[in-house]
Figure (cartoon, rainbow, N blue to C red):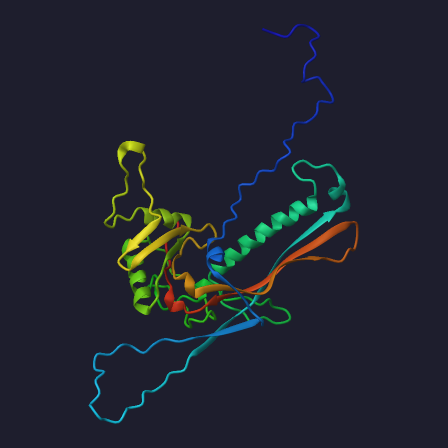
Length: 316
């Protein structure tokens, strides 16, 4: 069939209104599991310090002769450690014209971009907290940086000893040396959980990237991962790992390093804010509105021995 002669259709028409939906869809993830789970503190200087301590090892020969003079035990000093604050920001500049024109999906371009940059800033923070970054004191030409989690965990870590190393000082001042990746096994995870427990920690979270979340779901252990046939559902994932030392929630994190599996006692991690999330209106130098979103914060490892990690893992 063909159109009759002189049929006027949409292909010839001029002035048809565009059909642009008045909504903007974004699939970009914004969840920040570590920062959301960690405690929040206020710090008062660019170098925030705290103290850690540990009890003496238990002994089995603690017996005193009746009537004997007391033997004075030696006292041990606390350890004083700290971390630098890091300034992080996002900026927005919108012309007066762009703010004024009729737009689809948002009334104000400035407000929309500020909201978008706020989410991007939170993602940057989560990624930086969980990366392998040594602390940097900074100066007039170098930005300060906090030591991230990879530079703190040193006591209870499982890594490729062939070419990887732990941080030489468990105080955030030295990044770990990444080794050649190897496939994650259940024995690696069990080893770290045991060592954390022996050190006095009570880990409750295993935080991993997407690839090694699936690796953990493949662990056999003593579990049966299928449900009764009534709901026709096959369960092949592990969201809670039941270890000999307690249950740990397996939390996938899009912003952690996929090569790391972090075994965390979240009671011993917090994020300290010198300056909370703020927005500054920058000076106007032309026909544009400028804004700066800014935060200054640090990672506080109350005692790194309460956590651990399996490092140098394959990611594909």
